[in-house]
Image (cartoon, rainbow over all chains, first blue to last red; front, top):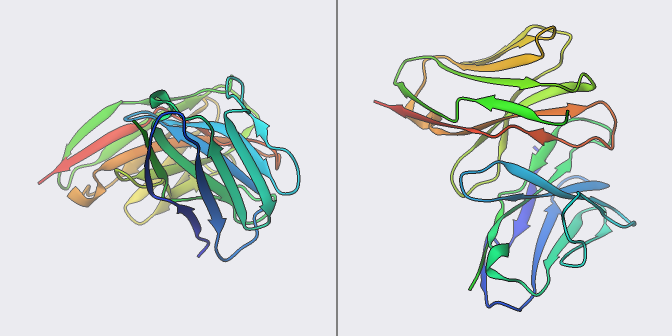
Length: 116
Length: 113
């Protein structure tokens, strides 16, 4: 089946540094990927929609200069948290449409970011 | 209008019992309603999904009942097992390729022996 791989699964960084999280579609091409953020015991909140070859579309309230998204190929999208602060500590999850235009989304295993 | 309301927030069920989680939506443009299961520290996994043209869908112990007029749908887990203990999210999606998957608030299910 379709697999979305995220790396790293866990990352700890110091406040003020930048962290990059990768999201790869392993056996299919994904023109669109989605980045979600999940705080403990809360639901998934959509941060942005990543489109291959074009700028990402950010949800209201999400700082695009802080959360940089790059979707340079049909199998890779990256989320960079710039100048991370403790309040950015969260679980970041990406997902991708298995088939363009279809409703089924496959999710990655998530990346736990802890900012000290 | 983009919200999906989910209840209960938490649910404790004895092994073998039936777990029922309810969701309600407002936006009539939604036409795909998946349920996701999430274990701690993992991403959500698609469990079962339904479209509004059917009132019920069953896959093994899991089923969805859908009430289009009431704009409500629910997940039923028959013969609940300890391994079903997880957080369950309902979600809704519109029919356009650019539409976004909107998640409910989640239900933490605990099934004890």
